[in-house]
Image 1 (cartoon, one colour):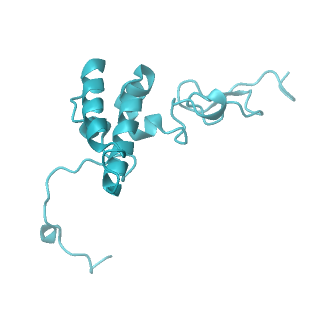
Image 2 (cartoon, rainbow, N blue to C red):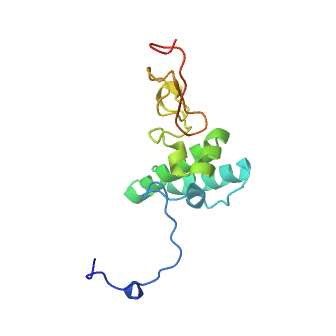
Image 3 (cartoon, rainbow, N blue to C red):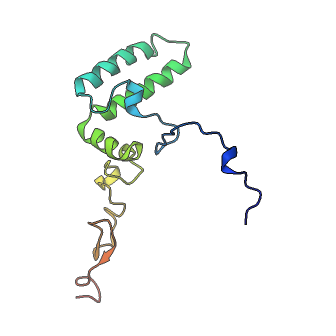
Length: 142
């Protein structure tokens, strides 16, 4: 038993907290100041406005502006591409992170299957997200 824990009433309620897959990244729609469901033209217009504002050439001595420019550019690259935007809308930052194992492609075009492209998994069916083994084919199951 943990008697040292403070009562829940001692914690300050700060309102709704939005947790992203990557704690350091902001929501791409918020970065561009565009609503979810905005059309490509609105996304592009928002990007160009912010890119012009934060461009390193116009803010030579402002390191924060350069970081903001990179953030705005990353948001635009994802939201302007239909496939990446669909993945982002469904899975957040993890959907467009090539290291996450989602359908963002990644090396070898694995397409979201963490075992894609790896040999030795021929008898396994991962199609419905669960683990199934089918005998037949391969050593011992011919």
